[in-house]
Length: 289
Image (cartoon, rainbow, N blue to C red; front, top):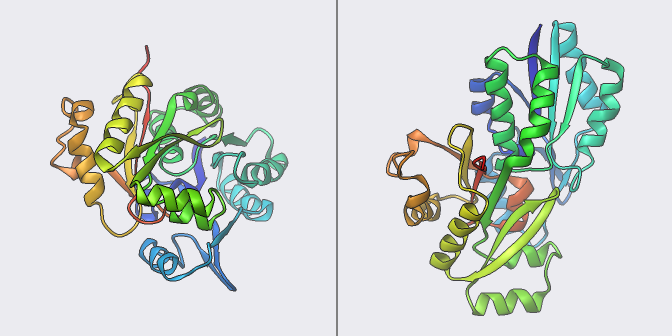
């Protein structure tokens, strides 16, 4: 029986990647004031950041409903497929609970994974599942393997500004003002399903160094499994600088001057709302010790 992989747009898997991988990406809803959009469908990445910069109000995202999951599960099962559904962390969204509710009608045919991640670290978990599917593994086998391997998935990010964390109520206005004066760049990860600040670096170069050091502390990158870079906003120039600054992590495995040799995601609403433009990230599976 064939396997249908379903995930959500919080993974920042583009519709182009979805076609390449033959998977289904369900869009979250993004609301600016009274206007509501489908993430990555009726609201492009560029349009999202244009609106984010222009507004004084942080946009809201809403979870995927049980009805939406059920409709997609039913379509797959009626087509003779089993489903593995990957949801953004239950620590930040109710989408996992919605998928679980919907899956109850399809016992044995639908398996739901709480990735405990979102953004590009969710994406690499999904890509790993695609590799397993293409190797001929069943839905149940993929579910069991991913439940173990997802513990190795990590994301590290540097935010270029504290402004959007302030607007979203994540830090105080005073902290944002002081951080701006000192050119502080917060370095973040996702731990136990929620965002955790690992430290604050003064300036981009120190931030890049800190990102590299944290990656090495986690055991380095397992290049046998997927990894991905990401950036927010309109330009990937800051990301390219990071890749060169941290070349010792990658130089033996990829050509850091040829972006076609590795994946770069345009990070959208789920993280972009709080990061603002200019943030960069890397997601990877830690090398097994």
